[in-house]
Image (cartoon, rainbow, N blue to C red; front, side, top):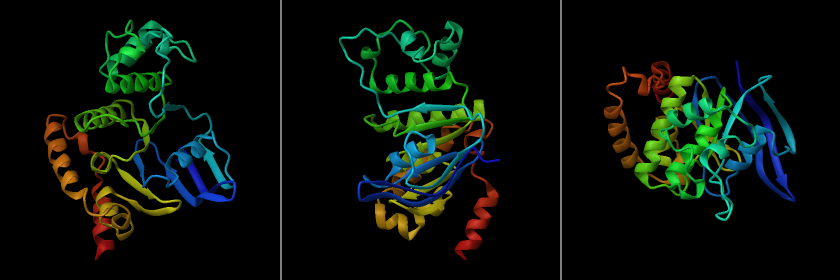
Length: 259
């Protein structure tokens, strides 16, 4: 079963082609990350998949009745407008106090209902955005550069939280990100985009692909190895679920392909 599928999708603005014949699928329970340089069409693709942006050609299909939780790039909230965390969680759809509290607890923000949104740090703000997305009980969680502006420990902590949410709720995760060293360690599958799909596959395969290296060079490999080491150590008490998505059959196929 496929949650979202794009087939030969192109998007044009004026005379410029932003996306050219992009095909991709999102499957239940997987963490799929879209990476690419600035201007590569990552956010455009995300909006097309969500049906926010019309395509110039090609088709996007969603599973009927698909429940989507969306975490946008950081929102700006007018500092002169009072807005508590509890009130924010009920926009645009009102939710019960118990559901709101449970979502905040799930994202490490328990007891913050009365706080003003404008008083939150960048990392806290993103966790509240995630809590709001979880209130839809999503089958797929869509995140558009969710850690923009966070420092490296903040990024790593947020992505570990995303993995925990996926494990606990069983939802798929579709992310757009520029945080290459963290993303490559946290994903099941990576799509490298530059107006078209340059390459896709398991993280270690994409990071070694000539197309990926042409766009990003070799600078992320050391950071990737370091993060994976810390990441595996942090999850050693989690009965192995931290990396239950590193599918052995993918590795076998990839090595056979490399050979």
